[in-house]
Amino acid sequence: MAFLRISILLLALMPLASCLPPPFVCATASTDDTLFIAILGALMTVVNNAPGAGYAKSQNQGGVNAFGRCTGLHNGLSCGQCLANSAATLQKYCANYEDGAVWYNSCFLRYSTKDFFGDWNVQPLHAFFPSNDNSQSPLFEAAVLRLAVTVSNMAVQSGANLFAEMEQPVQEISGVTIYIMAQCTQDLPSSQCQGCLDWLRNNIDSNCGNKDGCRLFHTSCILRYGISNFFI
Image (cartoon, rainbow, N blue to C red; front, top):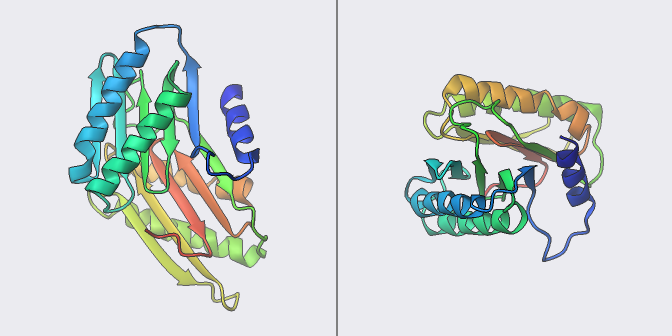
């Protein structure tokens, strides 16, 4: 766990640049020389199968499980390209680890030697990225927390896609609109999706404070909000 926190902290402190990788986490170093090939096979299965439906999984392929999904209703070529980039990132940074996850704006990809399907709390990896922009008033944070409940419930009730997004002006603050989205991985039943999003929502106060935007990543769900329209 110390490694995860250090990796996330270093990534968050790095200056923005074209070569900056997306948020990723690697865990549990391995000395198994065959693991890289198994990881590559599982990731390629997901990359090849996901574009049609927007998500795919590879179960126990060479002892490795993998899951990938694209944001919202995005599928097809853009989904495949995003997941291919994700696979390349994991191969570059996490090749010698038993668990790895990467979050792009348009997609998410994870692999693990653990069977994590259907349970958000199996070997979870997570990362929080508050905005560097100006802080908002406590009224803003209260509005975020209210909308986080609403959009989480919408995602849970959305059917197989487990995705929702919304925008709403903050009545207490003139000229400010909050854009917010929530999504779970499609291997989760609705009750597990609810538990994952509840966990992220409960981390807003301690990890995002009153910043005007934040990305909360979990290997089974995401929650993101801001005052600029980031919807794709």
